[in-house]
Image 1: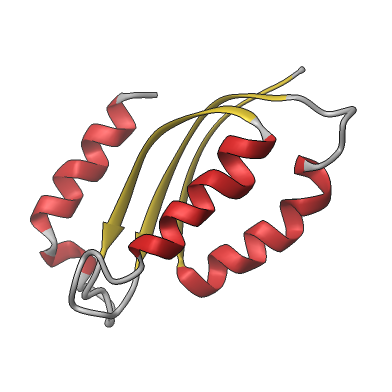
Image 2: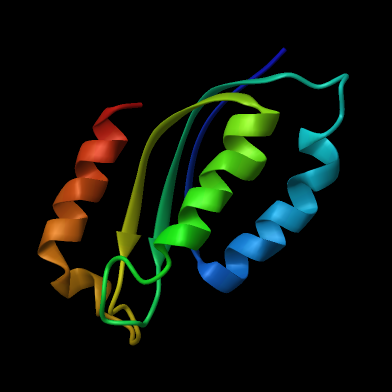
Amino acid sequence: MILYDIILIVNTAQLKTIIDRFYSIFNNPNKKFSGKVALIFTHAYPGDDFYRPYIDLVIKQPFEMNTELEMVDCLEVGGVKFIGDADNAEDALKKAYGIGLKF
């Protein structure tokens, strides 16, 4: 059994690459994953629920359906378009810190 604790911080385009690369690993019956995972999505759209249907699908597949990883939390942070925008998202930074404490 492979033990992992993972925090992914990605935008939606980068996440597709991660899913594509992990597809063969997650679907390998000889590999078992356990540990914790948290997802943090950032995107330029100003709202925080714009990608919610996509994020819900990503949580289910590949993580909940293909691994024994415990989904700790998921955070969507919108309005992150330019360098430094994340520094101004104080609520999101506090939530991300709280997610990190769960590991």
